[in-house]
Image (cartoon, rainbow, N blue to C red; front, side):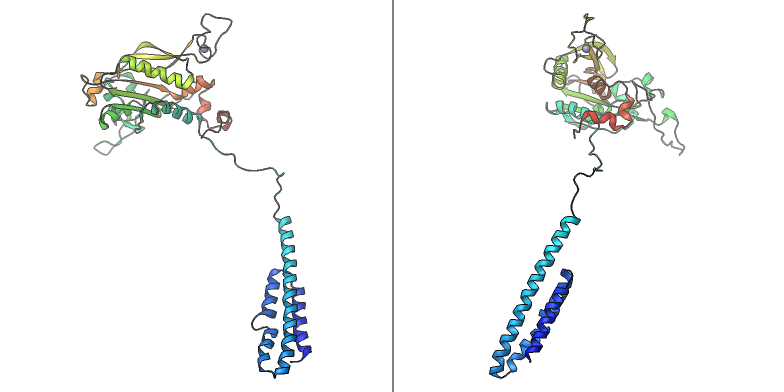
Length: 364
Ligand SMILES: [Zn+2]
């Protein structure tokens, strides 16, 4: 084991490290020149077979050579790592001044948030949310609610009938099938009374259908929210108090409602409910200097229909009208959104244009 041999092994290792262009090449050189089968390691293993004097000398020489090799390795390693880090900083830099191309986050439709806000008012009073099918049996949609068989609302000019199959396998036509797209959320009342234990306090938000053409004030698909309370001893004053609480919760503490007599098959007595105009608070009435567009200076806004549940409906749903009474009311969400936010064209609500929905904010 000549000294020149040891020096050659050392120099070869140093040259290989210097020549390594990246960390992978350095790793290969490291294995070749410092690993268990590298020339210096093999030489080190041969020391044991040398005579004592030569052993000490060779040990010293090989030890120095290995020390120089590992120092060079560590130095080159540090250099290459620094180069890599500098390159990564440049290559992976993010230019925060570039224009972004993110898809804007979506938000729920104002009709949905409006409907949920109304439902929340009643949930906080202990009412439960109830839902029913949109494709509904004619019996639930009309008969159970005391619509007489020849009531005009049952005609095909108002109601979408769903085609069914007759006993002979042929499709039904028009109003033969007994299945309709529900024209109001009221059938959920009948279903709830048949399904639930009394007393019943429910609120039913949902989509309903009528054969109207889509125009500025009509849409064939719209939303209603309906309320039903059946208990012992409920009276018209409970209905009035509930309505007042609702408009106070939605429009402010100084709001109030009024009832005007009306007729609906499923309530008796029935009333049209109005709420104080939330814009002028009634101050535009008889005051031409301060006209109000929202209520046409009438001071009140028509909200929807209500009344005490007709005893015939209670009987149809298996409830004893001698013991129980209750009230119901319902109104259209589109209409409420229109006057609450001065929306003038109902088509804006169904066209899905974000320019309409964006001003309502990102409420989710
Ligand atoms: Zn007004």
